Image 1 (cartoon, rainbow, N blue to C red):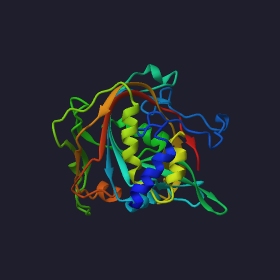
Image 2: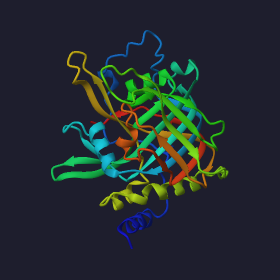
Image 3: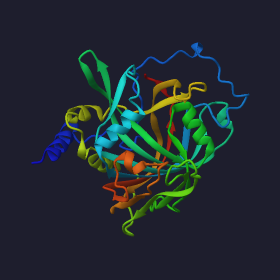
Image 4: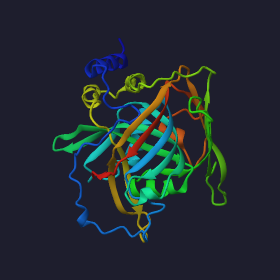
Length: 348
């Protein structure tokens, strides 16, 4: 029996086939690992009476139509990406390392609003997102070295079609949100889409940024997906595939941790105005993403194909360890849910 297969079976045996936390992170909540900072120690945010476009949290994503697909990636590339994007200071409490070589692509079309008493009266903002998700292990620094502490989802790339979402995501949490234009699917059950960005095919002193095609997701067949009002089948299928390539030495830890709460993790930073190669603020932020209502969902019986263009300004395939041309999904699911991005917590 191969080491990979043995590791996968060991994990499933230890986990008992029960996944209390959804692979798609819509049943998640953060543990109180760090004592929150008392708000009286912070200055008031100066928003001139209205926080638009940077609303106060928490944030409701209503009637979210989601499609998620798992792809095989190169774990060494993912490790390099985490080191470059998250593990940037020896003073940080946690070092985040990829748990598995599988990554998740998520398409989301939804209505976003604030749960704050004041900002909730502004209204709902339509938003479309395409994001890549990497499941990481937060390794805590100890006197004897680094020890696995908890799991966290890292979103290295998140494309959005709405400027307010970019402002809020980057300023409040540290989401690496980038502007894009989408050709969206009519039905989430057939989530074929394309994404265009303002970018560069090649860098050069005289190069001019222009609209470039970057991503395309297409179905390999016309087979209809399954449909169910029970999310457990979806969670089990996606979890089985996601944890098929667990990093060596983390099988037992993953089995113990999968029923814990899994937050999202960000590197929130701001470039210093005077010393522009320095950051005037730089911290890890973790925040829970919690489902409120599961309406319906299902699985895609056939794989989808993801194509990524080679752009110097958006080297997604290279950084994520994906094929430079196209790759086929190993699993996929769709769902309609309402979920909330809760307030974040500074952990480093």
